[in-house]
Length: 301
Image (cartoon, rainbow, N blue to C red; front, top):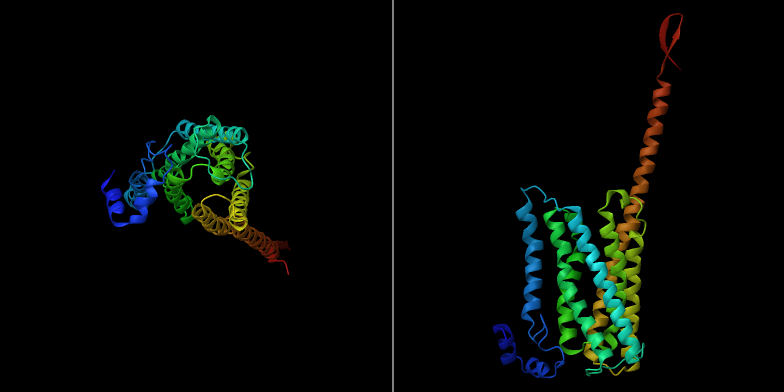
């Protein structure tokens, strides 16, 4: 136990009581340990890099990261995401999950353990995905480091530490299944986009954000409906996940509007303005074109 964990246990009785009711299957797992410090430390290091990385890089040349490294990184996440989806689907099917309302089943049944293991990989993948931002910082791609991007990456690790410590399974299954499915396509896009010959033929970037919005709607609906119907799953967990989905819906909707509607309209206006300007310039050029009359240059009237 770290000093912070001991401090919380000594000063917050409810926290100490909560730890005693943590899931016994995951208490000794890597980066869990019933101690928030490892996850919080990683999140703080991530935020430190986001804040101070651009300052460090300000007067330095952007790092050139070989395409094969970016390709390998992204395709590894494609493989990991596909593996998590497969393990979760097999486990959910084998455990006979109620897809609308599934209570916690604290058991070492092989199918239930498939789910718990896959959820741990999902949790751990959120630490791996910090590399997305680190690559952006060292390559000086700062326009990609939005508030949405940073908020999502830094909070997911903390939220899933909580889930994996107390409620790794049951009603929480839908988010990892949908998110990992989206990540198969998202990281495939990023991986293939580093290949110059393919870059202009990748057409599905726009739809990735749409899929992300759809997944948040589905997860929120699934979790909130459980609250309304009195689903036998820890209520605080359903409130936490529902609240997070609302935040992500707001942020991703705002991103989609600015990225694909506002920016698209601005581009159209600039194009129209450019076409009008070119037409006006051509008309003026034609009007002012000199003509010859009796050997003397004269402007057309």
